[in-house]
Length: 451
Image (cartoon, rainbow, N blue to C red):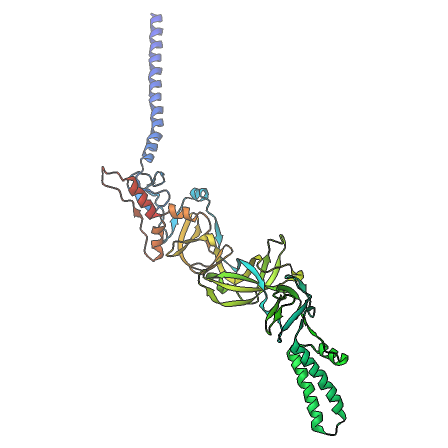
């Protein structure tokens, strides 16, 4: 009996512990399920709409992809983005970093421009000399008989025989003798007549370019010279030589053409849009292929007052010193003219300007992934910078890179609507009727219009 009683107690205690364990297990599982239920409630937050990942202004009431294949981002209740000021759009910070957007401050700076052109070396027209005679005769001797020969000023070029010159010399010597004989005469009229004859014949010799030294030699020697010597009027190079020994020459006929090339001209063509930058006295940096590594400096001395009708350019003359005659006419020269557009003006990098053909736009970086397209007016562009006439203020930051990526990824047209003073509401993505799929051509066309 006692054994049965102990067995009964043991069985009852086992049943008791089994019941207690079952109750504890149910309680713990209930506690575990309660947080899970709470998480499920949190996941079921209300989705207000789906927004374009690149342009928060574009939204849709259904999940979809944008033109780049990116999923629209769901916006839950309580997560709406604050309303931006008109014309401002956002790009996610991670996307800004990925496309490499760089910005630079708008500031005042000196604006310079280098005008680069090609010139041709030419003779200095003020230093060209034609050698001829004012009396006819025959060439007896040629001292300079090679084209290209360098001559010095006063150097003999040729001698010529002129019967008229010989007779005039004889008259001059006779007049001198008569003057000496009449010097002691008591008749003043005879004395004045002799002096007048001397003066007239001397003047005739001078008119024929007989030098004072030659006339003095005739007086001292008392001998008529058969020939007359023609000398060089300047130091230079003989560039033409029609004179030939023994030929007869008429008065005024060209015998030599001599060019003094101690200075030369460089003639360059400047395009119409650069004409306002060229001024007299500007320094020009000149290089020649014949002298690699060497730089020479000339000066702008003349602006020709006409345009070339075919090239629509203006010709500019630069004067260059020509030591040792190393610059020869018809040589090509590379010319750079430093022109100061403005000593201090508001400017931005040239890459910050988006020129659509109808208007010019700069994208202002407002920080935190916010950008504002701004209509601007640009003046002269020089050395990578553009002069800002209106639309930007000093200290503002403008995007200098990835402008066109921003343009294509953010619906710039919609943002520009805010510039005109219109409130830019979120743009609803128009969906085709159910069951109708957009053709690829329509998608491409819309993307081009949007860009």
